[in-house]
Length: 212
Image (tube, rainbow, N blue to C red; front, top):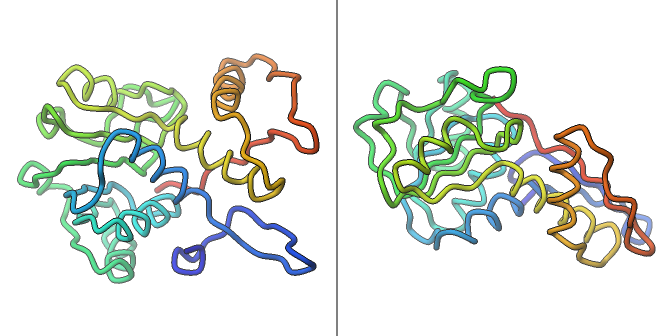
């Protein structure tokens, strides 16, 4: 999967051989599949950067019908070709139907919390809306989606899950996901993380892949 995504965010020494993984894909899919069965779903993927690539390949593996919208058409065309999916200009977003919307751009990230990558009229009750931005945790996009009756997934969930996947690769043991969430929330609030660490490993969580 990392080879297809063309990006590695985790390296493990496996018997003297360095092996690269991409845990953004796993973290995003786990977060989404907590809320929705992805098989065959119509997905609007906003962005074409590193994080969007990781998520896009995961969605393709689940048989999703993907439409990519991105500010840079050239960057989007490359990803569309690799995924074998559709591309549409942002101006057409009002005409698209979707079961799932994933924001893999930085729009809405601090200090621009008042921005949203979508006009509010695009959101419909029953949609699943995921925003990989985690600063702030509740972005404008997620607040508006929740008000309209959408299922929402914040960026902290993907961050925690991809970090948990990294730790399992390095230590061979799955960490406590809830503890990771709590430590991340404390870190975002400027507080000290929990001092308790699992024996034989640490709970340092690496940041996600880039956004565009």
